[in-house]
Amino acid sequence: MFVIGIDPGLTTTGFGAVHRRSNSYEVGKAGVIRTDTDLPFATRLATLFDDMTELLEEVGPEVMAMERVFVNRNLRTATQVGAASGVIMLAAARAGLEVFDYTPTAVKAIVTGNGRASKVQVQQMVARRLGLDRIPSPADTADALAIALCHIQSLGNRLGQVKAAMGTN
Image (cartoon, rainbow, N blue to C red; front, side):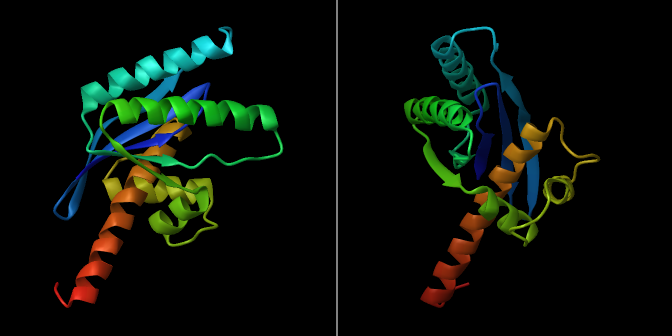
């Protein structure tokens, strides 16, 4: 399985590609896509779409997992992140990818076993599970890798539940 995790944002979007191979993980390309804050909103969205389209063509994931937009008190930020998520999903759809979304609490719970885990705890678990020497940086990259791991682990849990229900292992 080859998943690209996405931590959406208009200014900075984190991405992290993770291969699941038998009982191990391999990190593919990981990093951030940045847009110029001096450009108009629509131009930034177009840039994000183009960069995401290029990334998906280069990396070639099987599916995309992304963090669900969290609406906070800052409506402007929520609108920008929602718009960024929309163009990212459009790029995924154009690439023929199915998109799965996870709440921040679900990512924390699935990756660490604690839905209230701190950002540092999640980052440490990501580094440990992926066999990395250090915590991925910047934080948006670590978050994207956590989202990819969350999807892989979530799928594994569902497959295990289906096999158990069918009486097969």
